[in-house]
Structure formats: C-alpha cells, structure tokens
Figure 1 (cartoon, rainbow, N blue to C red):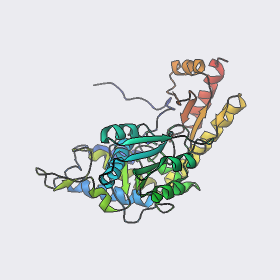
Figure 2 (figure 1 turned 180 degrees about the vertical axis):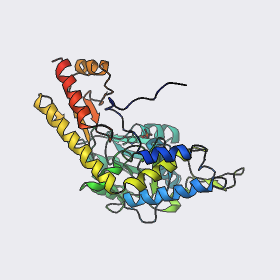
Figure 3 (figure 1 turned 135 degrees about the vertical axis):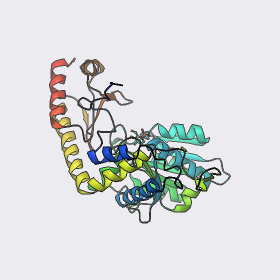
Amino acid sequence: MQIEPQAFDRVLSSMCTDPHPAARDAAERFLATNPGDPGTYPTVAALEDDAIALLGEIAGLDDPTGYITSGGTEANIQAVRIARERADGRTPNVVMPESGHFSFRKAADLLGVELRIVPTDDRQRADLEAVRASVDEDTALVIGVAGTTEYGRVDPIPELGEIARSVGAMCHVDAAWGGFVLPFTDYDWHFDHAAVDTMAIDPHKMGQAAVPAGGLLVRDAALLDELAVDTPYLESTSQATLTGTRSGAGVASAVAAMEELWPEGYRRQYVRSQNNAEWLADALEKRGYEVADPTLPLVAADVPRSTFDALRAEGWRISRTATDELRIVCMPHVTREMLASFVGDLDRLEVR
Ligand code: PLP
C-alpha cells in the first residue's frame, strides 16, 4: 500500500499531533502487544504502571491508579460508570457544563444516567450558580472541564468539587486536552488543588504520544475496582478497562513521550503554543474579527462561513464551534510559519 497518511502542514483543527520521535519509535516496537492481557504481556503491563506513575505526577496525584485508555472518550465514559456504580441504587444524574465534550452524551446514553447540562458564564466557564441549582441528592457526578474543546477554558474546579461534596457526589475533571499544558499555568485544576475523584488526561493530545493513548486516573484504587469484571480465560483474573484487547503501542508511546518531555519539553511546548495562539489572536483582531481570548493555546474567532469555506478549499483543515466561530488549536505541530501562511491566505480569500 502506497497511501501516505495525512500530512500535518495544514492541520489547524486537530487535538492530536505529530508524535514525538521517541513516541513513534516506541509505538512501532510495541505494536504486537496487548496490555489487556498482562499475564501474557508483562513487559507492556509494567510500562503501563510507569505511564500511570508519570500521569499521576503531572496531575498532582500521589499513589496514582488508572490505566491507558483508547482516548478521552473512554476515560470519560468510565468516570461516569464509576460514579453510577457508587450511586448505590439511586437513579443517578450527572451535571455538566454545556462546554463539556460530547463523549459524556455517549456515556449517559450507554449507562442510562440523566445528563443535566448547565449553561456557561460570559467567560465560557461552568456557571457555578447553575451547577448549584442543578445538583440534588441523586447527583452521582459533577463534571468540570480543564481545557474545553471549543475555547480552551478551565472551569472553577475547586468550587465544582465543593458542590459535588455538598451533595455526596463525585467530581470528575476532563483534562483530556489541557492536562499537558495546565501544569505550566496558574489554574487550579488537579487532584492536589481540589476535591477531584477522577480525571481524563490524554497523552495522545498535548502529550505528543501516538494514538491511541488516553488516560484515566482515579484518586483511590477502590474506585477502579468498581469497573472490574472477572476474566476467566485470561492469565490475569480481572479487568477494569472498557475495551478488551488494547494497544500496547499507545501505552509504550505514552511512556516514551512523557519520559522524554516531562517537564521541561512540555513546558517549552506550552510556551511556544501559547505564544502562537496569542500571535494569531492578535493578527485576527487587527483584521477586525472578534476573538475569544486564548487562555490556553486555542483560538476562536467570528470568521464568516464563506471565508472559512474558501480556506478549507485551499486545503486548511479548520473547524467551527457550535456557535459558528472559526476554531484553531495550536498543537505542537502548528508553527508560526504555518499560522503566518494561514493569515496570508485569509487576507487573500477573505469574504466580508
Ligand atoms: N475531552 C475533551 C476536552 C476533548 O477535547 C476531547 C477530544 O477532543 C475528548 C474528551 C475526547 O477524546 P478522544 O477523541 O480521544 O476520545
């Protein structure tokens, strides 16, 4: 087969990126391993422990427990599942800001829980009054997002944790995208900062690992036990993951990327990506567009659909928010040159 994969030189919409060379190499070496069967594949199972230890360090969790998921979707589904299991006979509801990722809709559908979606405030963060008004004694989980998909916003996690505690619910933080940039910011987002029980944090996004490598972390090993089922035909006796056979490539590449980049490489990348986002926001503002302040390396601006379509026709991979703004994610593969070339095309193709 001679088909080449998608080149990254015009990709401005993805939350994944070109893996770090060490991550790419590790993925290749572990292609034929299955951490879903640790008795048979002990080397990759040990690597998964290393991955969780490193994720725990990044997310401020001593003694971390968790596993490498297929992505943020699986981590989010599993977090809802844990909370549902803990809800103990009640018909549970889950409270989430409207900025939450659509994977929670899948979770609610699959798990038969009620998803209560509350509005965001004028800074696109969870509206705490609306969250307070939505929780009740049947609330099993309050979700906060640390790095939203559309605007890169960080919800007030400590306050959400307190609201969750006030009704005996758990608190889940979706840091699937933000988890590898937030350690270099002033936000309160992780286990040490707040009453957080579970977290999604994905090496295959800002962590520069190969796909598939998401992460689920839980504060206490007993939480993962809520997911365990017996596994009679495997060498190990139980499994907490959603999928059975899993990618050892994802696990190995996550470890390789984190060993290579945490913390200094990720810090440098954050600075580079954030500077790029601010440069782009400034360039768009100067051209008269309304731009959502890039608090993390993600830019949204009211570029009209006609211009957007013309840019897509030029080969730019760009996407739009639910309220129809252009959205650009400044991932590690996005360079200043790429953005300058994009803005050049925007000037040429702009339809006002
Ligand atoms: N959570 C957030 C905040 C995301 O931005 C995404 C995807 O972009 C997900 C979860 C889902 O992750 P995945 O596509 O790896 O399943």
